Image 1: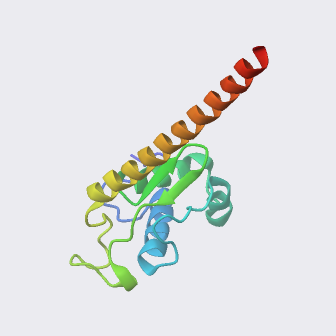
Image 2 (image 1 turned 180 degrees about the vertical axis):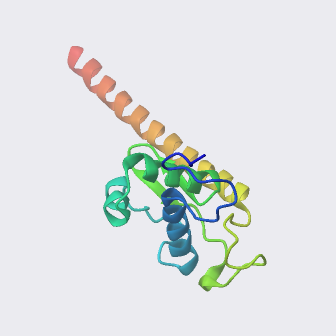
Length: 141
């Protein structure tokens, strides 16, 4: 029986396009081309670069996020969480290792940073609302 389009048989060893995209981005992170906090290329840019469909790029990004390499910030895009080994050195499992060491820690730290940013934005908005309410009540008296 022939494999369905876009799928591979178990053990075929041929990476699918979304896996190629994810690994290319991981390599850019490992080599320092993309650093923690850097924005990852947009979906449109990756679609152009790899000649891939939107869903394929989305699957690659989901894989990076799942493995702890990236985090999404609503309205801002996807960002590099961390790099597993500085200076492009191979880790203990060699260059084929794809899951970063400490991925859970990096995700927690990224979430804590995002939460702190959100809390600051809420505090700023509260201050602006209070200032506006104060202006309205001052005019009303």
